Length: 166
Image (cartoon, rainbow, N blue to C red; front, side, top):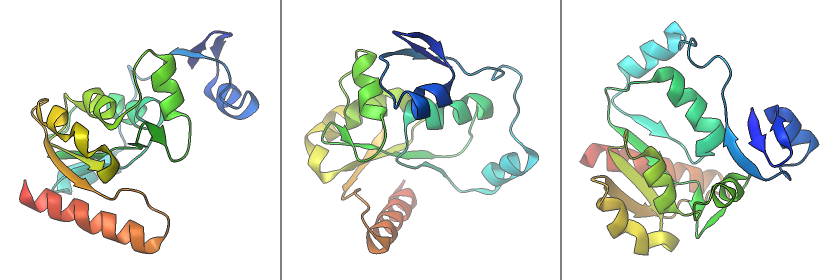
């Protein structure tokens, strides 16, 4: 559920019908208190060497998952979905701004700070690396924009090498 300046809206109403136009004031995930990850999800996390949070919206794509998983006993690496204060796709930067938080890679790192081992930020945001490190998080700076398969493959290899260095 999206708490907005137009009242509480179902996410699909906010996202699809209203095209993310209402101003965001917060989020609520119905049933999250009793939700449990599937057996397969638990087994995958247990078998993994690390967990990678891909560059997706922290508020509405990743947080619901993290609230269900609750505890991850593996290194957790996140790739920032915000580059140069903007999202490549979707409303994450808009949501940060409307919640009174300047949208940035640093804001994303702060969002995940309690679970992060490592954080990947774009070359554009190199100036934020020092502040991310102050969160007691290891960093890797690279080109995170993925326009094609070559870019996706390169970023995946960069992230895997980063995990190997932790």
